[in-house]
Amino acid sequence: MNKIRKGFTLIEMVIVLFIISLLLLIMIPNLTKQRDNANEKSNEALQTTIINQAELYSENHSDDDVTIDNLKKDNYISEKQVKRLSNLNLQKDKDTGEWTLVKEASH
Image (cartoon, rainbow, N blue to C red):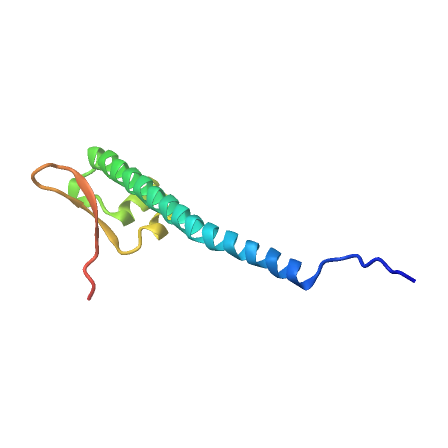
């Protein structure tokens, strides 16, 4: 009797796994780069939003009152935005009058 074998040989399986591995090696660094790029854009957008809200707040209050806590307390920014701003404070440039976010000094 002559049986016909069906299925994959070991060599065919190794070749398929090798091709899949090569594709993963190409894709994973690109996906990581895209994620980092998206996070950077998101952080830039958040900073712009916070600075715009600080300017709006300062029109209705004293410049000395503009803090992350006061922006949150008066609902200019959300709790989620505050969490993303950990270790950052608002600071107004005395020469230009522009608001910026700066890292807190570590103790």
